[in-house]
Image (cartoon, rainbow, N blue to C red; front, side, top):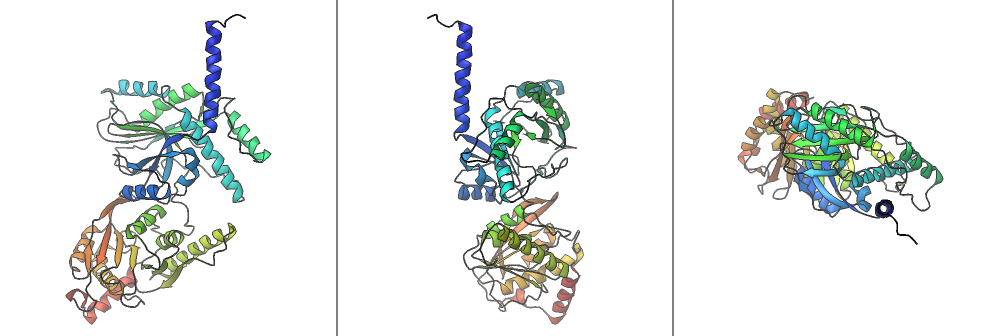
Length: 490
């Protein structure tokens, strides 16, 4: 028998490698997942990842992102994280990438890089993720077809330069015809056909570039355009800005560069609220604020300015052994909260849950005269009026001290906590400085809320009994003015 020539050896080795790679694709392997989170809550999100997935998350130098390694069998768990907005799988991470000084050289390097990246694992995770979404959609009885996010929607909010976070042409990866389909044992023939169709259809893609830093010789749209063109040439994908299958992410922060493939079509904060108000709080931010309180079994937690109920809704889903009270002085806000809670309850029932209800009540009240017993509340979490869309900065000077005083009355001395979000930092700092006998201020978490620099102020109730400190004594005139201001808040 003749020995195969060198050319044949090459083909045999290639076929063997292909088979080995196929088997590896069908088994569990490890990848790095990236997640965008509300800025300021990176440590909170990292704690949740460690608690729920058992992975150690590291925080990016660029605010608002964390990274963690998982095995692919834990991919479904990642989508149940409450702290993260968007998810992506990392193709390659460069901690100290050297960008050339001239625009032409820097963009040329990015174009050459496209064909040198290890795309295989990331694209396999993308395919697995698509299969998960389709199965989840069938269980819910829908087609799970959602419109793609518009340009710039739900983009992370780092400090970027002019016109950055520009979405440009990105291509979708086309899988080889013999790539494994990851068919599940016992799966329906309909699902198998869909997977086969997905594998053979030409993919469409786009590239989204976000850039932070002022030492780059190129703009975000230029980087996305040239890198996307090289990706398209390498994979022979079709560029489509709106009806894309794959979104390639090019995240640049100073000398750090991360290339990834998106796993979410829209932000995960769009999960529970269906009735919106003028200042609806993001669910991920509401969850992060609640985690700062570390709710315990049987805790009574109130949101005295609930708006649309984002905080109590997140709370009663995650901490079902605590009890939540949502209130507002505006009847429309109370109505929205009730509707959002009813929506969650109906969703649970449609999903086959036999739970009797959610541990939450709603009430309309005067936030400066709460119908709660003194020292009856464990935790207070609320989004206070910024004085922009709701109320005014002038009214806040009277409203904030009255709120803090009433919150101190209902909160348990020595153990009670308050987590309060506001962008009117000067007014709040002044108000809390006058409440030293009732509240002790803990480290503040600075966050970005819709482009506004805001603070999440964490307070601990002192052991002083309400009614025994100078801070809680007010005249009847002050009471009347506070009540009038609170009614005018919205």
